[in-house]
Amino acid sequence: MNKIKSKIKLFNSILIDINDMIGFKSKLSKLFGFFLFLIPSLIFYKRILKFDKLILKNDISYASKWLLKKYYKGVEIKSIENIPDKSPLLIVCNHPGLGDATSVLSVIKRNDLKIVVLDKQMYKSLEGIKDKIIVIPEDEKQKLKSILLIVKHLKEGKSILLFAAGKIEKDPFFEKHSILKEWANTIGYLTIKLNKLNINFNILPILIENVLCKKSLDHKLVLLKKNKEEQEKSAALHIFLTSSTKDQYIKLYFGNLLNSNTLNKFQNSQEITNYVREKIIGLHKNL
Image (cartoon, rainbow, N blue to C red; front, top):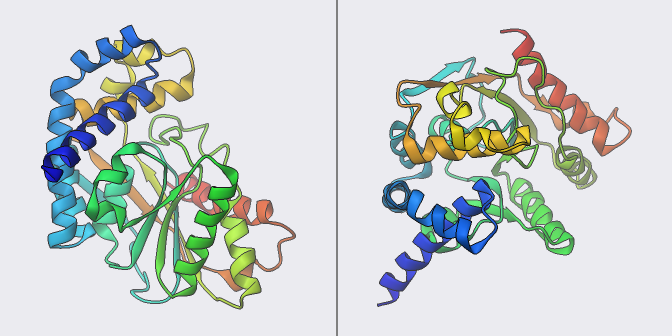
């Protein structure tokens, strides 16, 4: 009985998260959304359940490869060398869609990796995923606790995957001139905090592109959104509901490791964050 309740709760949470991303506010629009996305939501629900089971049975890299194949042809990788399999590692990426996390997780072979995510209903019902994430809530006091959990994880010599913008950004493959405009200064804050604790760690910058697709970006429901940022968020969701990127490769470009000791020259957390962001922008300019 508890398992049935848990599954119902998970499916409801998926519908809630979909409504939030699409932006349905009224009861009528939410009802419309329920029927419109019922079948795609059921498919996604079954896949996310299998994904969660594969994490528990195997590992998150194996599970991510399986889930990625349901939506993309695969991953194209450039310069994936010298990734330490031990020692503290902060992996920093841009965030052009919902498939970017699985693409990175499918190629990083570290069982101690935790992903920093925003608070979503769905995560609370998935046992495998729950153990692999650090949730950043909206409440500022609770947010600080989550940041300290990241510090603790790195202090223990483990690895973190951080999408530094904290929200879906423009896909560099489609938006060549407007990449990575705004980032929270989390990277800088973590660097300063860990340097004060004499914890030496590496930052691995990764540029991700070709996560979205033109078909989703040009979809009528997506274009109903007046705000460009909301359109990109809806396009990302459209891909997960329709698998419109099945013939597409996500592209990952790995930068050189940045040692935290080399960042002591900067005056504040924002300068450190900007420096790391520029390193990722540099990967884009070199394409």
